[in-house]
Image 1: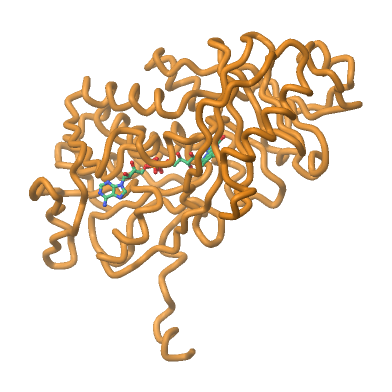
Image 2: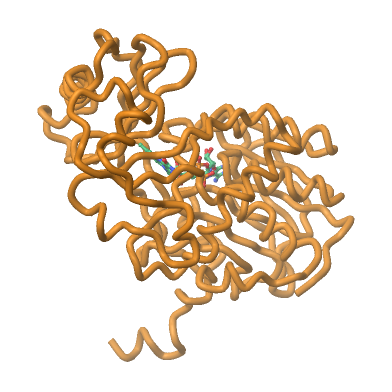
Amino acid sequence: MTHPEGKHIVVIGAGIVGASLAYHLAVKGAKVTVVEAQDIASGVTGTSFGWINTTRRAPDPIAALRSTAISEFHRLEAQLPDLKIQWAGSLCYGADTDEALPASSHQSLAFRVARSRVLELEPHLKNPPEQALYKAEEGALDPAQATHTLIAGAKAQGAEVRTHAQVLGFTTRHGQVVAVDTTTGRLEADVVVIAAGTGLKTLTGLLGMPLPVEASPSIFIRYTAHPGVVRTLVSNTEMEVRQTPDGAVWAAQDYLGDALQDAPSVLAQQLGEVIHKAFDGIGPLDLQTACVGLRPVAVDGLPVIGYLPTVGGVYVCAMHPGVTLAAAVGRLACEEIVDGTPSSLLEPCRPGRFKPAPGASEAR
Ligand SMILES: Cc1cc2nc3c(=O)[nH]c(=O)nc-3n(C[C@H](O)[C@H](O)[C@H](O)COP(=O)(O)OP(=O)(O)OC[C@H]3O[C@@H](n4cnc5c(N)ncnc54)[C@H](O)[C@@H]3O)c2cc1C
């Protein structure tokens, strides 16, 4: 691995992942240019629920990485107070909650609470469950606003940001990337970081190794309502909902397909009624946004982070849940790129796992 301190690093993509990488790289003293096809946070980051969610059903190959997410965001918000994270905790209940108990490494973050405690935490809930899983240390943020804050932090450290500059290709020499070709011109680069979300497969395809990261749809919804009603983040079989201090109610829903009755606006109206019935005093929910966002999910569900094994100087970074992991991965990936310090936490995420075995295609 090279030590590109002082070298030029081009980061492709200004979603929360690219922004976190750009920020950490710039703070380390690297010369950073971010290139973004559209606007900052215009990809899936702009339609994300924003839950810093550390719990997954076992077995979770990235449990150790996930368990650092909360402390890494505390570190980051101390550096960038404009991140404005709501550390209100989450309450999960209903089917699946038993199996969703966190891995032992972060068991301290979650504990079962009885109905009386649920009511203390969510006093406006009309039908509180007998018990719930309370993850007191979890939080949520506005992913688009956080991305702008990270980009502003990167710029303050000297990073350059080019929006409306789509990457069309790469120039390589002797198996090493040397430049990125964009719609606004060529950029010489010592290292290229591809943080392009669902654009990863196309871009790595141009480098001869299309990584199997697919677009996984999910629905993002936002309403206005009476402020101060939903106190934590509530996740159950009927809804995944939280409220910001200005009264906005944020929700996420499964994507069911492209039939008319499953359109985001239709599901959002139905969910609005469910939320209205569930919380006393929330008032009528006024729908502001309902849209589909495309999450970058690898075929095995794990993040894809590390150097591409086929071309020198290309580091890839795509994942879901990208908001949860953005602070941790931004720091760890930056240490790999700038200091040459490999992180054991990122080992399960290496892109080399998708490298076809020699002769594999002939065998089929
Ligand atoms: C409804 C919904 C709810 C979600 N809830 C959560 C949650 O609660 N917690 C959580 O952790 N995650 C959540 N996610 C997932 C999370 O939003 C994503 O994992 C994360 O935003 C991915 O960020 P990213 O920066 O990798 O991708 P993006 O935000 O998509 O950024 C990639 C950027 O790369 C740019 N780009 C692509 N190709 C090129 C190119 N050729 N040239 C230049 N630029 C290019 C794109 O324009 C885009 O801006 C949710 C997603 C959805 C849809």
